Amino acid sequence: MAPKVSKAIVLRHIPGRKGEVYYPIEKIFLPIPPLSANSVLVKISAVALNHRDFYVRQDLYPNVRFGVPLCCDGSGTVIAVGSAVSQKWLNRRVIINPGQGWDNHPGAPESECGYRTLGASPAGTGTLQEYMTVDEKDVFAMPEHLNDAEAAALPTAGLTAWRALMINSRNAIPGRNILITGVGGGVALMAMQFALAAGCNVFVTSGSSEKLRRAEEMGAHGGALYTDSNWDEKLLKLLPRERGRFDAIVDSAGGDIVDRGVRLLKNGGVIVTLGMTLGPSVKYPMKAVIRQIALVGTGMGSRKDLGDMLEFVHANRITPVVSRAISGIDDVEQIDAFIGEMGKGSQFGKLVVEIEKKEGLSKL
Image 1 (tube, helix red, strand yellow):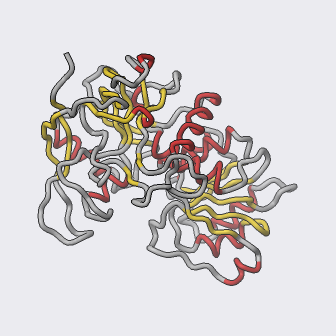
Image 2 (tube, helix red, strand yellow; image 1 turned 30 degrees about the horizontal axis):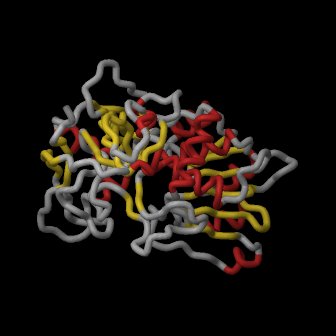
Image 3 (tube, helix red, strand yellow; image 1 turned 135 degrees about the vertical axis):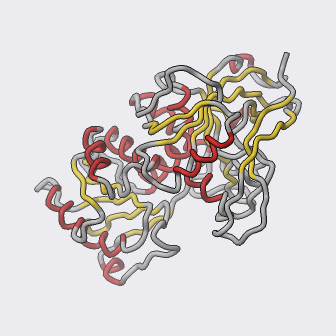
């Protein structure tokens, strides 16, 4: 018999100013809506956290919704299908599309509402719940080599990295020099893995020597601490003699990245920015114009991008890095503290909540 209610973790409203408030979370029971002809019911196995889940608690994303399940990344198993859905989906292990409003346009979301990320948002649902009703077009077969936690860690980080590197950098080509800043975060690690699989020479930065070491163990050609004032000079010395400049930079920090990029990049090089953690804007100096350095903004991606990314992951046996996993949806205090870890930025890889209690959780 199909379940009628689902446990979910949601935000509870309290008064407070944007950026100063920290909305508490609570467990509630939500009724599971009847399946439409084109929907499926997924029993959620694992949910990955993103920095977004920490920021929405501070009201730092627009249109935060209360009583709507948190999180946009999830994996699970289809346990029921609508009347118009092929029976092939039954008992299939799947990954859930983390957003709505972007089907296959190469440049931007088609929806007039723009891209809507799942989780405490106007999308109306999220993955941090036991059961989730999803449109058939928003479930994708899970790459067979991944376990549930690894699969949950893939959608947002993988989709963002895919669009940044494989589409917007225009340099995912064998032999090209790619710099990925802030390695250790989920997106940076996925971008690094994609670039390595594409045959690029990959270099990284981090604020941690340990994270640099681990990135090099995974295949990065070298790295530098961005806490060093001359980190750009150190990276240039690591490049192959026959190709002494970078072709592209994938960056999430902002700050002085364009000034640094002018020194690091070839003429016509590309900086792809997917965040500005050091401030709300980036200076673009005239010397970047003269060098024809392109600064390209990027976000997540379309359903088509997600499908293409999953095919690449499957073909190249790429496995997302899970930093730590916890088990169960009932311990609200544990989940609360786990989300708080996102604000520290100490993890190497993704933080994952496995919905069902299991033995032998992977802790890397």
